[in-house]
Each structure stands twice: as structure tokens, then as C-alpha cells.
Image (cartoon, rainbow, N blue to C red; front, side, top):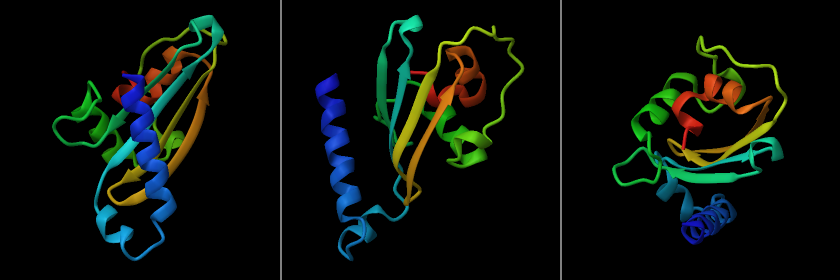
Length: 130
């Protein structure tokens, strides 16, 4: 699976490199293709998880419809996402989430750190629940 993720990352890096050219811009117009990553602290095992969200059938995100609905309602600003009503502990085990690629044809490059995985899921819902 990590080989596929590396291939997608290479694809998106090449898309960003050519996004300013007249040939690449029309191809990306209206397209959604985001690489989502979550880097957990050593307290939570130090895992790095990644997936691709396209909002189309067949993408890798296990909760595609809810993740796309979350982005549609709040946009791609991770800090604008509001927490649900779940109760989380105060332990500090930071989780850094990132998304880059294209959301509806617009370039996205967002990174945010949450104090722990519960707070991260409370704010991002299905978006980083993979």
C-alpha cells in the first residue's frame, strides 16, 4: 500500500510543478484529488497514515462521502472545522495532519497539529478517519 501512496505523492508533486502551465491548468479545473496524511506521536505508536481522497467512487478513503461532505461544508481550512460534542482527555500526544492536492480545481496545502487523536477526530470528523 505504501508504494501506491508514494506513487500518488509523486503524481501530485508533478501536478504542482506544472500547475502554472496552460496545458496542465485545464486538466485540473474542477478536479478533486487530495493526499491526506496523519502523523501520530510516539505515545500513539508514531504511525504515519495516508490516503487519497478524490470524492469519486473507487478512491482509497474509507469514508469518502462523509469526508467530502465535511470539506464541502467548511472548505479546506482545517482551522475552520468545528469540533463535535465528544469528550476528550487532556493528554498531550500531538497528531499532525496535512492535505495537499486540489479541491474542486483549487490548489490546497494545509497542515495542522492537534493535541491528541481524539481532538483531531472531533474537529475533522471523517476527513482524517482512515
